[in-house]
Image (tube, rainbow, N blue to C red; front, side, top):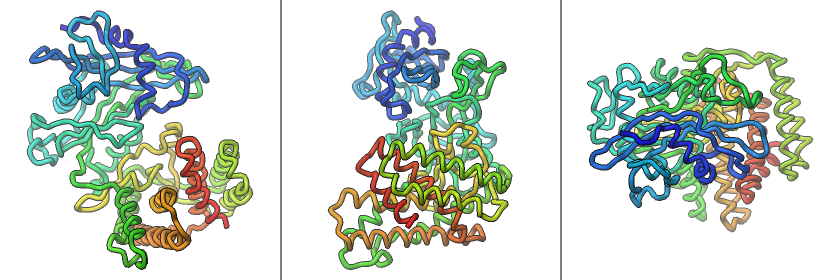
Length: 497
């Protein structure tokens, strides 16, 4: 039996958690001084005494900062054991003073037994407190073949669990070669767009996204309190839905688009006399297929979630937002100064675009790191949108050209980031730019083949979206990778010239 109640145990760890959070890759406020960490809700999910005592609690943490009254909410799956195995020392949180068998606290997702308990809760459709574990109708976990089928539930036994190292804002656990659970670390009231879109695309049998298998959801009322940016102390008068995690089919034997594109550029650099279309690792055919896949997903999103338009007034509002972003970005990145006039002119040109502009739900943060190449084709993943934006903006209908622009920017990055690390001469730069142009054109041609229109013909809109993304990149690089700042600056110089 538990010696310490979940919320009491989490409260004992509050000071430890304040020191532990900044070291986590998924923590979104690195560099800010934490004023306090308060566990506002905790739920016992699993405990066992045999063969070794183990327990898993779901904990919501309210984090406050010295520089703002706005607080953030994060979820942590806290595991407890009597002794912590050496393999889990890197996720140790701390020790409880008086807790009987539950002495050492750690990030429970890294413990195979505890991570497996989450999957079992989902397969059984369990409820724990305000948390609801759910599997989509007609699917279950198949431990034998790595697929999903409408077979009897319970085939989860024996699936090993491992945490993926690649993600940052979220944490994902892979079960065998069958399923992957994505835990949304930062929690806000409302349905997470990734889960919402995955369910909508499942309804229309979209072939270019991983199949949704299940989710973990709940409701937030007056307690725990999850503040909004505009009203830091607001408490919802009625419970609000919240998304905690989603389970999808695992894309076995897949490679991410960024790695594939970067490998293609490396092949080009290794060849002294070959053009981009002559190198064995030419990526253009894959870029074309990727364009087809993105256009297909856009069509499926329109069928599943409807369409709209942006009128002349909407374009003025869009231009105003872009102008505001470049003005604030120039404060952080003085190097944008010489381009500010040209950037503002490109945004002003939006008001001359032909209206109405077709709009719909889009990916919102599309780049080569958000696509996977499987043996059968391309998959798009992570439909959360730009994580720094408020939820209302991430779910707003927009032109599909924003996604196209994001992918075009990613082709620039895939090639240019290697030049930053290389002693590059003019010839190498010329051939790398040739690779960029070749793959940007291939992607747009593939997109046009499915969409029925060529993004390159929408000059004003596509140019504005690309520049808006590049301005965002200059701020990100200045704050995180200053040596990469020339990449977006060079792109801005090229697009505005």
